[in-house]
Image (cartoon, rainbow, N blue to C red; front, side, top):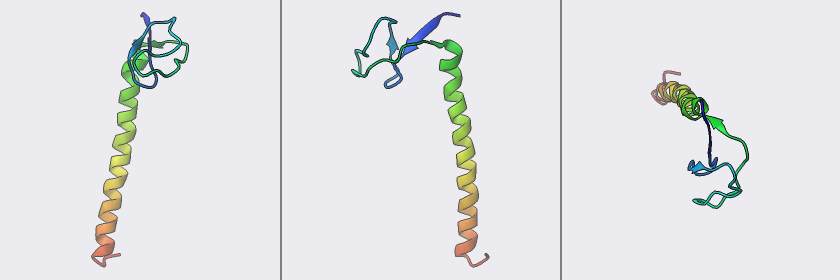
Length: 71
């Protein structure tokens, strides 16, 4: 699979020789990411968000029970 580089600040596609991102101006971190990494990383983040969302739902239920005087 081809290797590609993306700006870690704004996400734009970069050419390997660029030292600064022409879109956001931030310094590029040398190295490239595989397409698998680019695709899988957001999926992993979504999994973590789902976990956080579940914990927030449980806390909301517990808070409702506390406010209703059941705890």
